[in-house]
Length: 134
Image 1 (cartoon, rainbow, N blue to C red):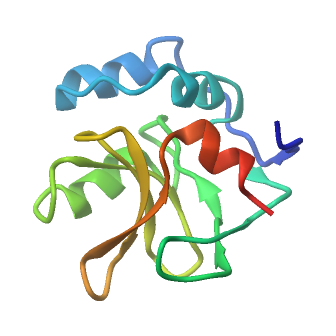
Image 2 (image 1 turned 60 degrees about the vertical axis):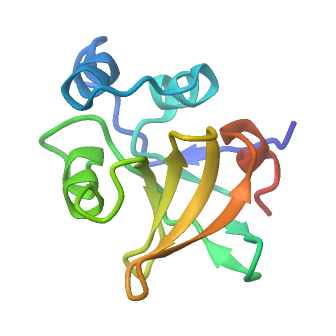
Image 3 (image 1 turned 90 degrees about the vertical axis):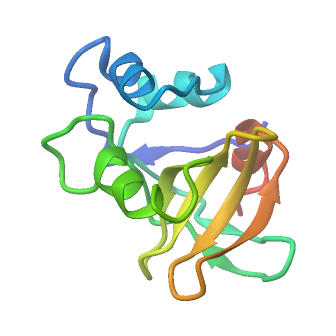
């Protein structure tokens, strides 16, 4: 497992913060993703680089937050993405306004490019995504 350290973590405002999102948007997030957000909500890992199926050296800026009052929240990001593709759940952002997303249909992790509104596959699971950060 990739040893990650996290900065700027924003503790969840309530123990039900993730369940509240899942209920509001009728989605069930994978357990590995929920476990990381329970500990590192809104955090920034020390390893930020990742590759997609099409591009190299992408950068992870921060995990989104499940706290509705925070600056970069999963709620705000989902409202941007939902009209484009309601099967993508944004979970993190990059410095350029793109999102790393959980794809509901096959449980993979994909990169969503905001200018072209296209996706590039990153990993088969959230755990694999974290393991491949460099």
